[in-house]
Length: 152
Image 1 (cartoon, rainbow, N blue to C red):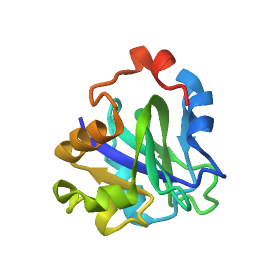
Image 2 (tube, rainbow, N blue to C red):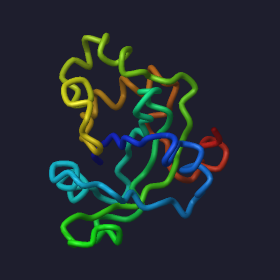
Image 3 (cartoon, rainbow, N blue to C red):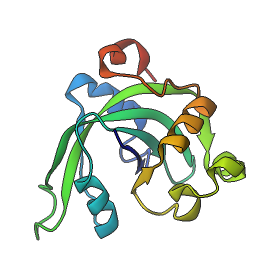
Image 4 (cartoon, rainbow, N blue to C red):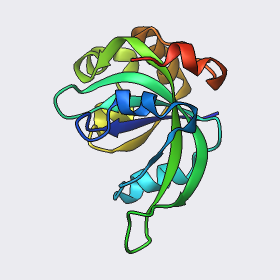
């Protein structure tokens, strides 16, 4: 299993929107960065990701699961980019802000620390476990218990 981080502007698509989609999940479209698109091509069913609110909040607010692998993005008229579908898993009980993440020596090599602008990025397993602990998240959460754990 691999781990990822998805950045979203909360006023465009926020955690509450993702949770409201329930088990149907939602496609992650509109990515127009080749590295972010490459990351999405590597995703497998069941991979997990952090849901990160960008702009003013700059924090991890929950976890998601990949429920559909890379396919063409219907919002890309040139057909160069794709998307994946994700489902909300769990809401963070404590948000991990970018400042808090940057202050943690164990996370100094995390992509978010060194390239915070990349919209879809990989997360190492050790980083996943550590950030889940900071956020009060279960690093092994499955979609079987999404209903009771993903409410914002």
